[in-house]
Length: 391
Image (tube, rainbow, N blue to C red; front, side, top):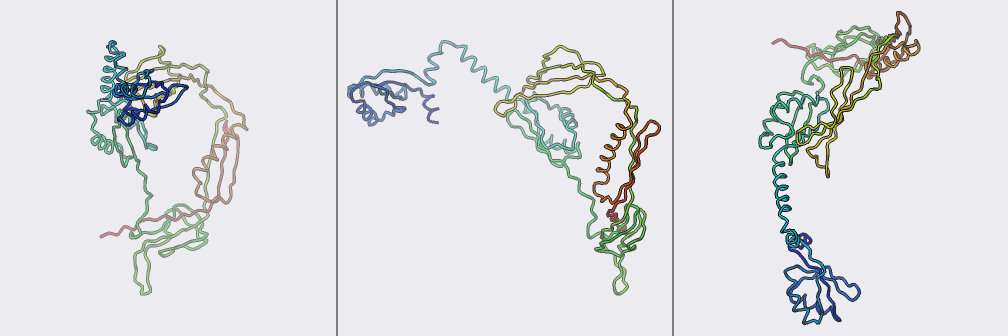
């Protein structure tokens, strides 16, 4: 802060030459003149002082028998004096300041944070439909209204905050987390089977078992009854709760054609570049959009300075040509591909199930590689179902 004040006031760097310059420094200090940056070099003493206080040092120099000589004049007043005849510089500074003020009235960057499951393009379309984009006046943006519209239009969003920071319009979003469907403890319910199987063990926490170990059950069958009789033969309705483990069967099938049509790159690539400056797009390459057999990949680079996004974006479109080619797979290749797909489906559909045994059959027929895999599993087949009481 002290350096800024000295620069704005202007200061003088001068030398002191004499036999006893220390006397000069002491007298200057007693008279209230503030010297700074004092250093000794050979027979000279270098000092700095605020420009307005330099004239008071001449009388002190005569009394101390030393000579003063100005070496440099620094600070804003001397800069203005040096360039006062060059009016274009000051006009340019004023125009620059006015331009910055004018640009600060607009939004030049839009940041969206917090979106994962929701499609970002859906939100961008909604925002553009409200007339909000880079280059929109900040005074025309009503954050509370935008928040209400987004909440009403996009059901997957539970909370949104719209903020304007400088020339950046930011959207802070929190998505809804789907709560599991759990029947409250106070609601009466039965426990039924969600799959066919043979019961191997049960853990009953509440309710009356309708089956026993070793019984075969089918999907939808009642396992634990929510109606419970007490010692006085009175029937009460309870919230049945249990884990019922059973041996179950699952079957997965995968087929892979030996003759396939695959999209392959031809090696031809077309690049189109453009610059987006203050909402205006400027083409950097004069190349037309390629045909329908090309696929586009867009790379966007936002220009930042000191972590602040500028209203300048560099767009690079890479168009890659593809063509359909028939590929004949060998029996081994087709079977390997079928095994990979089967493994992926197995991990997806049977991820929470304990697999006890697996019987896999492979065959090549009718131009297809076919794998059928049968599983014997152990799983909890209990699922709660609310008891609807008619009033």
